[in-house]
Image (cartoon, rainbow over all chains, first blue to last red; front, top):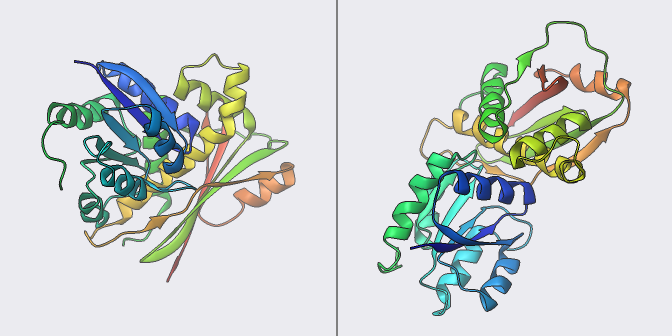
Amino acid sequence: MSYRILLVDDSATTRGMIKRAIQLAGLPVSEFLEAADGKQALAQLATHMVDLILADLHMPEMNGIELAHAVLANPATAPIRIAIISAEPSGSRLLELRRAGIKGYLRKPCTPESLRDLVVPLMENRHAPTVA
Amino acid sequence: MRQPSPELLLEALAESLQTMAFICPEPVTEEMPAPAAADCVTVRWSGDATGELQLATPRAFAENLAASILALEPGSPEAAQRAGDALQELCNITTGALLSRLCDQPTDSPEMGLPTSSVLPDAEAWRRFISQPQTSVLMAEGCLLAVRIQESPT
């Protein structure tokens, strides 16, 4: 079964890089949507449903954690899986991400293999409860 | 956190370039003329220590970087349009790769800022940039690429 992914990153180059890596990984993605920050992502979600959000942590308008809070607080979007792809070392932040309901973390630079390892389990378990 | 070193910085830069764009930086083995102008990107971090990482390179390298990352035709208008963004992302990812090497405790949690861009307008500005401490100069895709770090305890 194919799925739809929303890429959220203030760098258009990074969105392109992640999209290309996912395509190289051979994942069954039917559509990519893109947004430059959390606010744009919420606007996309008002009219388009997706299965997975891959978001940067730091963005000028609404960061990845704030986006996760907003998505999971809305019953219409709460089933969407959310993962963070960030350059920042995870360290103690992982706990904060888990508490926000974020299901995965990948540190940039990401490879097709690392993206596949992140995305496949999230999509296989996408109907499991979303509470962290 | 561990102290940064030029070796760790170059390791982080090489990893980032290879993974993002299949580009392998090389040492500078012969005298090269200073670029007439260069783009410069800075990423700062704060937390257990504060510091910044800066990358400087001629626009030609940034365009090649964008073309490699996005599988675009080198010299295409889109590669030129994405050049600044690609260089910012290289600096962002290299800073993250460096900080992950410096964090030796689970509680180390440096927070990175957003990349900012500036211009080195002439060869003299380039020479001043590379004369600063903790600066390394490499070759990548036939262009000079300078990288430096500056860290100070909080």
